[in-house]
Length: 277
Length: 112
Image 1 (cartoon, rainbow over the protein chains, first blue to last red):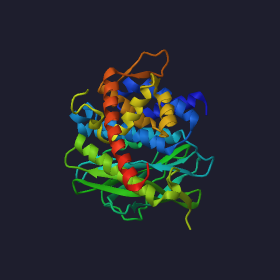
Image 2: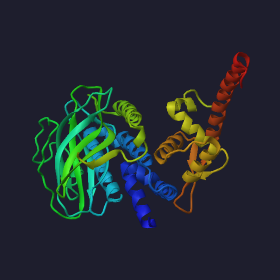
Image 3: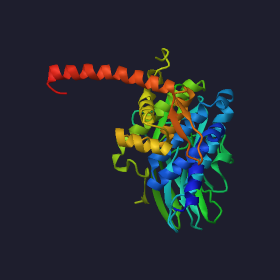
Image 4: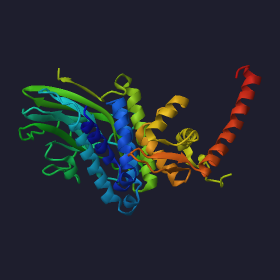
């Protein structure tokens, strides 16, 4: 990895943090990350650590406290962009599909409000990809949120630009586990992202899933992929520091539960992938 | 002595990371990466970058550490007088706990 690549990765990772934080700590944090990358080029735990702390800094920033909903959306938008940037920077296969991980870190929403989580399918193939089905993988001990929609978007349709569910052209009705989405992204080099929405109705409840299981068709072959990462949607009637703190602690417990449930993939990429049998 | 509530105990579950950072800086000024390596050396604990900078920001806000000017991007930090006093107070309290625990283990379990 070149110095330019390392520097670019470090700066992309910093986008998790609010602008005031980046202004104060940005340069030294970037320098620090560059040294970390030199020591250990890839670490999902490190990325998640920065994402979680950055999200917390963003949610507890004074700007967020003044305009929680606006900032919440901006935060999610930035998070999605960072995810996209990170994935664009990761290892994409030459032709075959390469899947990466799902991110849903401690989003706090109001009862009935839908949170959006992106999961990526990275590919540099020109072949078209079709999403065939999607379902949440329940996390024992937690309420499973309702899946209210899913869509494949290509790299030109940033998930972040399509917040405020429903995504254009999609309903908010609850999906069954066999969604058939015939959306076909324009052919061309790029990444396809599955964006899905979850909703929980009860206040002061953490809705969490182990991850998401999808099937998709690529080049005439049906594949399946399970993405393991706690997609947590904290439902609170009042946003703010207390709700954020509660959400963060609950989400960390959910993450830990996923770790316990899947020790074999602990610390590795949280997915299982292969042709559907 | 620090005022009541201003000690490391008030950091709650973040006190552990704070102690590691303050203990490292007690040995001299360091930038973030050097600090991580030092903590690894003496405590066998790795501080991930998000955790490190969250703690640095918190300690700086409490004036327990202060940033120094740097010629490159790696900004060093040093312990303040308040930071040294706070760390000392915390370690002293911990020392009492350690002593009691050791003594009771020695009497009751013939260990430690």
